[in-house]
Image (cartoon, rainbow, N blue to C red; front, side, top):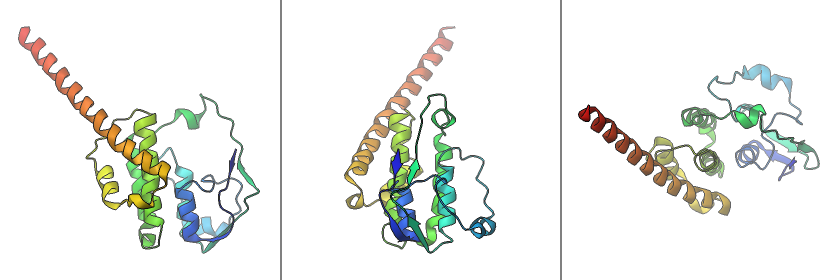
Length: 199
């Protein structure tokens, strides 16, 4: 069960930060919307994005509002997890996560000067990359564009202790996994060449 960690009338910026930090529901359910928000948005989820598409849509809507009211007493979600469910079995390659990050960034660019937005955006990226790399076992180049961008833009003093721990772990595991991947690739290539020479 998910319940909101914030409540009351909050500004657009506070709502976007809450979405990025999972302090409020990132799903479209248990919400009331003005219909003209969708009419003016002309929304279409990019076909490459199979995860967090609800978050992307809510951020797009949030750029067109002034305030949001959140009732903390409303249960936003009652989850029943199944291993074979689409949300459990569908995962995106890193390239598609990068597409999602760029779409969110393009929506937020005009808001990066507001306190907390930029930090929340990169904290969100850290959480998603941590899940991809550490929990799903994806190999991420520690010198990749997204890791480099995050290093340049994140202020570790503004991260929550749990996110700071994920960021340190992510960098360490990225380096270890990538080094092993390179070593394995080179070793395999040498073995293949050796077999060809022997033949």
